[in-house]
Length: 72
Image 1 (cartoon, rainbow, N blue to C red):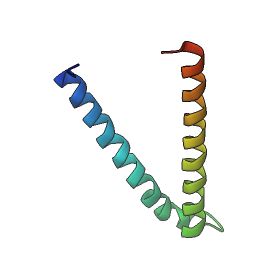
Image 2 (tube, rainbow, N blue to C red; image 1 turned 120 degrees about the vertical axis):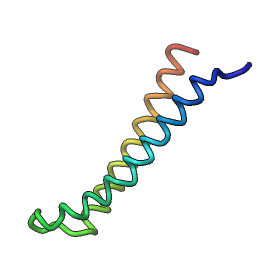
Image 3 (cartoon, one colour; image 1 turned 90 degrees about the vertical axis):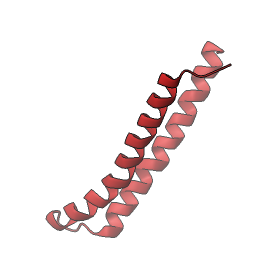
């Protein structure tokens, strides 16, 4: 089965955009910590880690349930 070149470009673009957002958001949070009382780099890193962990778990659970129900 051959994958269309359009699909390859869309996957590459999606990967690039998600990678860029994933790298910029924690760095942006470090600059905002100066404006928040009690904010520090440790708090920003912890919040980012909690978000990514919960996002990964919810994505795995939803993928499992979709595969189980739709059986595709």
